[in-house]
Length: 284
Image (cartoon, rainbow, N blue to C red; front, side, top):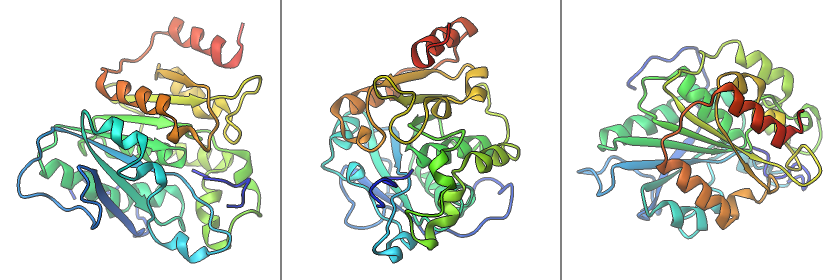
């Protein structure tokens, strides 16, 4: 989502009208990222594709950069995350311009087309790994397009219930305001009304980042990362003791995500949810 506000820095129907957001998909493992990825002549050796979706990166000094898709460092071929995930999957980086609400990224042809091309290439598993706002986009995608072919979603530090800093009118260029504002609590609450219920067969897990002695990762609250609606659905959670801005760079995070990709994710029973609430939120 917000890489640093503190540093100022078609195979299915479309449910609603959306803006055509500039996007790009690159294959970063095996590395062919010198040019955008297209359907290969034949399926690759691996049958699992992992798509890394970044969050917001604020461009206060060069606002024009927000109008184009840019990969983050942790999406690059030599990053620790990509190297670890490439052992079990072909890895792709999805990037998008950040000038419209997150819903436009979800509903636009870019992500839908990327998933469709991966299916055409012969991948049997398509896993979306989204950091921050990328996690919001990934969840919305499987809710709005349940037959698209995505088999699993791993949401890392995603502000499902919004983030208070997104209500501010400072810290980001005007061109990014629609994207930032769409991550405010009221905006996320309103968006939830138009989303389809998360299907029982959808594999989704919340990787919650939490710092010591506080209920936040330095940007997004823990109760937003594992929101009440997801708790009610029994969506499992994994705790990573890390801050919001560096979580995707840690080897421990890479290994955690790799294990979640390999494992079958099942919904929790209520007693498991309550136990996790005690650990994360201090509930009695």
